[in-house]
Image (cartoon, rainbow, N blue to C red; front, side):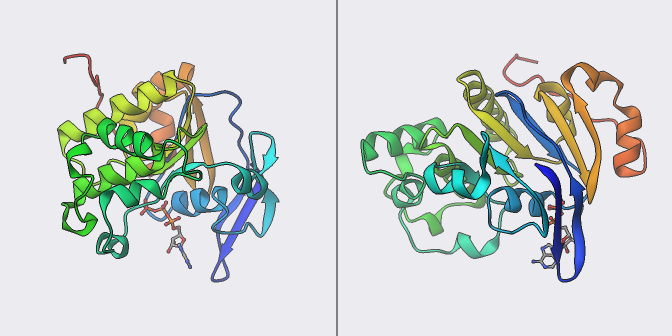
Length: 237
Ligand SMILES: Nc1ncnc2c1ncn2[C@@H]1O[C@H](COP(=O)(O)OP(=O)(O)OP(=O)(O)O)[C@@H](O)[C@H]1O
């Protein structure tokens, strides 16, 4: 994205943000509450229009790319969608553009998030964490080249978070580009290829090689030092 500014209610929520992702991998957006992360993600997904600047996905203007291709998208949690009366199977199906191999794809996606046995359940009867897993299945069901996740582990228990992180790592290994908003700085430090720190502007940008000297970046981002928890998902520690 180049020089993207987003104005909401007369306020510059995002100001002149530019960054690019050059190759497949895991890219993380971190930043304080209200810093504009969700706004940025919604703008990438063409749900909000920038007042200036441009966004490209795989070298195409984002709105054109999104018209022709499915981008897996998990929006930030909202209470509204939780009470929608619909079967789990049909929620996941919504992530598919074509009907080809629908059943196999939907059930495989549910299997990946440990929810296959709930395929015929009513979505609104599931717990918040189970619903989140189903929504993750919807985001990955079409095997998208790009997966955009806004705070995906919110509401997941420790075990499910670990499983989710393993799933993300396997998707990245298989060639998916993942762009993820998270407050889990430890995860970002341990596993991402790059971290973008957003607090209205792009406060800083940290690549994998620089991640171990992050103290100054955390002070810049949050205004005070933070010691992130480290993760060793799936490594038995
Ligand atoms: N539709 C809207 N109209 C007006 N202001 C908005 C709108 N949506 C968000 N904002 C404002 O934009 C700012 C950034 O919000 P945003 O949700 O993008 O932040 P965030 O970094 O995702 O926060 P969090 O970490 O709390 O989820 C906030 O001040 C918010 O009040």
